[in-house]
Amino acid sequence: MRERGSALLLVPAAMLVVLGLAGVVLDASAAFLAERELADAAAAAANDVAGAALDESGLRRDGTVQLDEARACELARATLLATGNDLVTDALARDPCPVHLGDDGLSVEVELHAEARAIFGGGLPGLPDGYAVSARRRAVLVG
Picture (cartoon, rainbow, N blue to C red):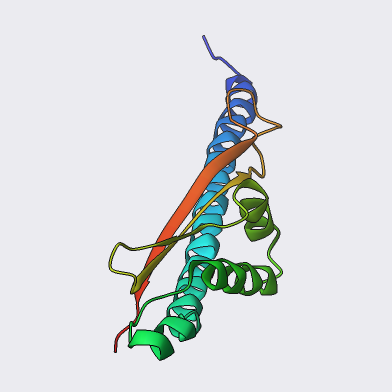
């Protein structure tokens, strides 16, 4: 007995599976790209803060070399907003000052958290609409 036309049913089903897997791969790639963008922005902000947020009054008063926390926050926000990246803007909306100074007063850490939108997630059942991404970068003022 010949079963004619059985391939006609299997090909569309296989295509649906392939398209679903392609959607998962594209969403994962988009989430990875978003995490890299956050990491690059955090690294730029940390480097700018470490290089330009020196507490000049303490240096002049008693020779203390340390970073100024208020200036560090201001510089980090300016650097992050200059990227023009919506993901970075979202991270700043969650935490307006993502800068943390180290106990030594010479190191700075910038930590960003955001939600990366999924490309296919909303259209495929079982996949999320977005992915939580974060990045943390550290820089040290060297004297």
